[in-house]
Length: 103
Image 1 (tube, rainbow, N blue to C red):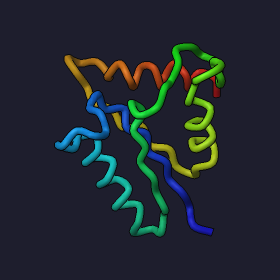
Image 2: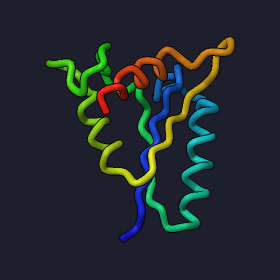
Image 3: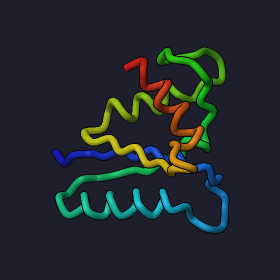
Image 4: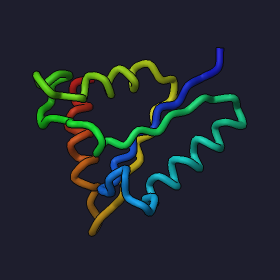
């Protein structure tokens, strides 16, 4: 059974932006490198989901984190892609990291 990879893109750019983000390019390169080893991968943009603030695995109605958490748990490899702005991870990445506290 082949390994699976799940990459979560924490770019600040919306998925419908005409220009791909640098984080998109980096994650695509990582998954392409993993394909050499027959690893199947998926990239999901965090900004396309409603990730509620908090530190629990489910923050209630409208929270998309439980679906993303299931994908993380189901994957053999998890890659968190994030840009650095002024020496800090993006606000989207910080939200994801806070929610990962529930693991």
